[in-house]
Length: 203
Image (cartoon, rainbow, N blue to C red; front, top):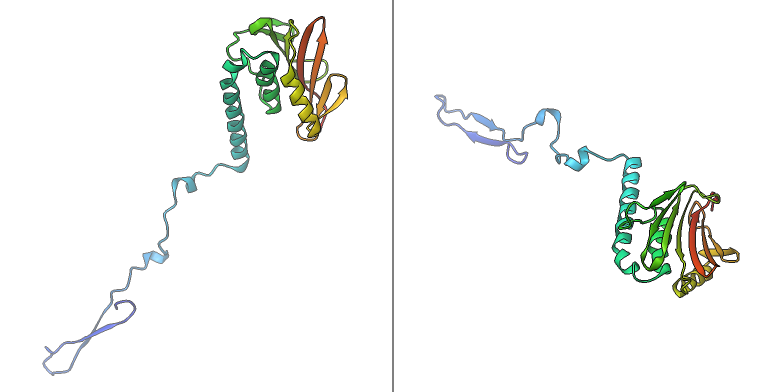
């Protein structure tokens, strides 16, 4: 049988002269009851459960953010309190990763606060148990140099309703992140302090 058609041939060698029909079957093998199909790939055999896949995706995203922030540090080192705050504190907590302390050594611990020296006499403080939240990141400039970059940023954030003012020099994130973040700007004794804290508030 070729392509489903039986082939018939006559054998003239019989003594009686009668023809003998022989059917030659060339059908495909039955594969023992199974139809051949595509072989499973390695990815098909080993699938990551949805929960672990989401965790790995989130972890990869946070690592990517941390690496990106670290690459900005050389420029921030010479740009003043706002650049230090934006790179080491603001961007980090907005992306829900720890404050960036790369290149600053071990720091000096004082209870629940670890302080690091920055350039220009500025300091970075990481508060692990602040009274007003879960953790906070602070940049202080004793020289009190103006921070127009911060002023421009917070004005745009308020206009976009990303942050809303809650008191003089205090703004809270509005409906886009949880826990709620609070950003603070304080001028006292000639020094400027920029602070961001993860509060216990829900969005």
